[in-house]
Image (tube, rainbow, N blue to C red; front, side, top):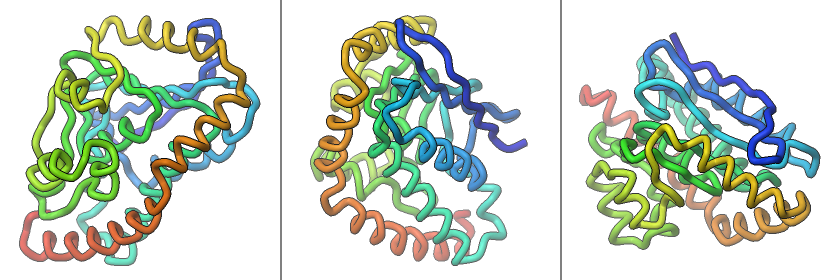
Length: 245
């Protein structure tokens, strides 16, 4: 069974929060093309100053999100794969650009595209048991090369992207890639506290700050993303031909 993404509005920390929730029978919550489309449609509808004031990304299962749905890749064409990559990168960009702050509550492992969902959020609160990785290199692909040098510098990015290393939540905290680490049972309380702090700001302030943050990240980013789509599609064709996928 593929991943379902549900959306609901609830009160948290005294403000209105819109929650995207990932769940799947497998518990790894892969990002199928349908999930990407559904999230993008909702983000576009939420790109305004109206409530909710904050967006949450949560998940259930043994992973927060394991990234791309590899089953979907088995019979995909080159054009189909290229379109999938373009769509998921557009989703990340829209997460960074939407006028509302996004908080990811990472209760378990976030790998590949799942790690990117967290990294493109504005705030990440991770459970102490969560692990993060961009493991695409182990399948002959490339993960996050368009983003990571901007966040942690080229050398640290090379360790993450070229080697596909796995990082603990505490590692990610030291690298400045998550905001808080806590026991999984405390994620909701930590999010409520952050929402309370965000509640002191106006929606207009969110919009201006998000625009500024996105500009810092995306000057040249879309060009880097376009290059990544080309490189990843070439790598995908090679990996499938050699049996890595």
